[in-house]
Every structure is written in structure tokens, then in C-alpha cells.
View 1 (cartoon, one colour):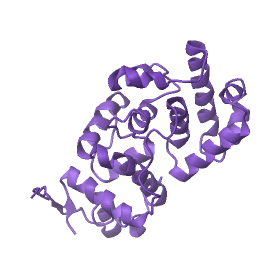
View 2 (view 1 turned 135 degrees about the horizontal axis):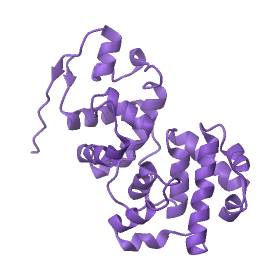
View 3 (view 1 turned 90 degrees about the horizontal axis):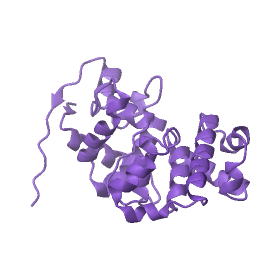
Length: 246
């Protein structure tokens, strides 16, 4: 089967196929948590599945009295609660660091007032919490709390998009924001939250490291990597014309 080369059409097709494979419990919630909590959830969510991140976040909330107790806890104590998330220690250090910076700046644990500053200014202020808040975390907050159009890209999502041929293989970290912007042009705001969830599930289920499970993947005939892995042939490319609205 020829591979679709129109990247926007390809991503629409990918999302439609994955929607049928994974039964999501409705559209992902927007503004379901206060902004600070959404950032903490995003730290749990990066390079994990929705179920894994939600379980870890809920353990975190139930295991400590409040955010201040987490702030003054050790990295080891917080990491033990986050396990079995990968790199639990790194995530714990980021969560504690974020809480500390917010507390030192505000003497509270609320960032919701940033919503009044406008999307660009709010995102800019969140980016100041560097080392603890990265591009994925900010994009997640923009998508889920600030009601803006963003596609959070972690290593898992980048891996999938590279294998699909949507983005280049060698990524300069300095260009991540530009790469994210190009993906956001291909995925509409209305489909963005679901797209984020489905790509994570694809990365976890079939598009794994170090080797993808292409023979089992429902996208093997549409993905250049899938075609090459399952047939040994270079994919036959086909440009699909965008549908015209009636």
C-alpha cells in the first residue's frame, strides 16, 4: 500500500485509526485541575500513558497531606510514591523544585491568576520555572488549562512522528518549539487533546524502543517505518489531495 505523504492527511488518518483501536473515556478534560496541579500532572505524564500518569498522580495526592508536605519531603520519599513510573527520581526532583520555586515567589501554591495575563504571557511566565518545567510541560498546560492550541511533544511522541516521517530524524533541542509549531499546524485545536493521548498509547503499545512492533501495528501499511520493517521494501509514496469541503 502506498504511504500517504500529505502530512496533515496522514496525521488525521492516524488519529482516526487509533480512535477505533483505543477506547478513550470521552474527550480529555480541559481545565480539570488548577494550573499548578496540571503542571505536576504533566511531569508525571511525560513519556508515560494516561493511565500510568493518572495512577501516579493520584498516589502522590493521597500519600501527602498537601503540596507543602511534598515540597519539604526528600526526593527519595516522593520518588517512592511515583514508582513504577520511569525516572521516578528525576520526576520527584522536578516536582519538588517546581513547588519550591512557586512557594518562594508567591508564598502559596496557586498559579491560576496567570490565566488572566493572556496565553502568550502566561506561557512565558511558566517557562521561567526552567529545569522543572520544560517545553512539554508548558504545552500541556496551554492545551489543558489555558485553552490554547498546543501539542505537547515528549520523547515518545517525537519517536512516533519520526517513524511516521512527519518530522526529521535528528532533532536539535533548540528547534523543539518550532517542530511543535509545525505539528500544531497539522492537527486542529479540536483534535489536539485526543491526538496527544492516542499518540502516547501508540508509542507504548507498538511504536516502542528500541524496536517498533510493526507487524502488530494497525498503521503498518501507512507508516514508512512499518512498510520497511514488515516488507523490507522502501515505501511507495503517494500524495493524497486534501478533501474539499462541501
